[in-house]
Image 1 (spheres, each protein chain N blue to C red):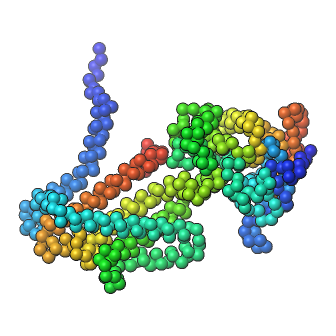
Image 2: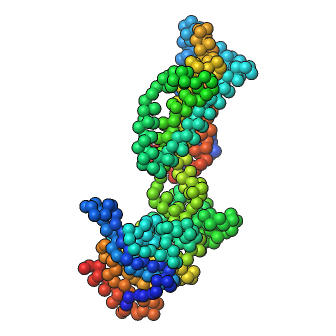
Image 3: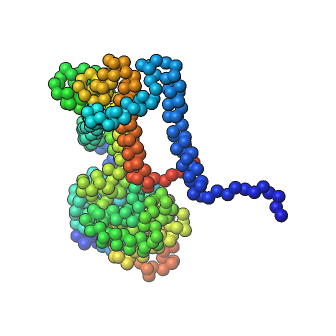
Length: 256
Length: 271
């Protein structure tokens, strides 16, 4: 069931990637990722699943270019996201676990943030931000500051901010984990629809099996220190029984 | 038919006016008390100890209306503003370097701490020995006495910036200028305004000492003249010039705060 793709065709390519925190060879050294190989096809929605502390966020930060791998190769669209950091301007967007809205900016100004980095003219910027806020059901809240919005609304603003730049690659770090299940379910469905409609490649970090099955068309289960323990692809035609089988296998892998 | 007593109904506008009047009264009351106590004392003490505040008022009017005397006030104000601006620019630059480099931080922190321990009057003496130009002397004194506070306050603000928000902004790959504009400047602005408010009070005290010893004009120099003439009304009138200036600038800074930080949530329950 393992998903394979040639490195050149991959939107995201990780080869023998390791990450050690602290001074290597000392007692304080902590190996968060150990020789990880992973390729993600363009247009794929990959759910990275694992228990807390298994290295999901470290992989996420390396793909985002926020952390440099200790060894191995990370490529996104064929380029090194850490060393060629600026070349990914407008090509990669991130939805974080918390909304991370700038408190001094209104909802619409927060959505405009990525567009400002791309030097999009003010009028066009405002129009695009308005469009995404409306798509996410926040019409009428454009001029509200984050403190005046609910948790779900703030997270929707952060999703709008990520989509507004029209980046090809979306990285999501448990974006709905802080929300109540009903709000999270609604946003998850909206998110999947938007990713599919816009043909994005998405990496979605989660520790919930149900969420991974709902979001991804591929699930990679990680075991500490970030090594692939299970890798499965499926699609809309995958039947309920097969999904339940995948769920129980993932459960078994996580319980090991 | 109800037996309840008729109640007086006040409109929201009346309530707001009453609240505003109450706020104004509360803030003015301490000044009124001080003024009354002073004026009462002036009835029983000699003029050189407690002059009538009416005399002080007319001396203030003289200073405002006389071009030569008001030039002294303006000179002092410009010295304060130039000193604060110089210390802020140098301190802000130092803080940026210190936050970027541990080596610079390790080198500069003890020096700035040492500077903080040197009394303002010592800087005045050093400046008189080291430099000839009056204006440069005063600028030097103002910068040296306010530099450590500005540097540590900006450094603290830079260090307290949210790592999460920084990472979020970084994820959009900003240029240095954009990072500064969208993230760093708004994040540290509250601390910068506080630093200005604190240092403004310090600077207005230090400038008088600097002018008292090393200048031939300005409020400090005029205070020295009043001391030699044993003219308490004049001394108070010149002191009030600085107090007015500090109050006006503090008011302007508060206005900027109220406008710039309107995004902040306000809890209905006070601390």
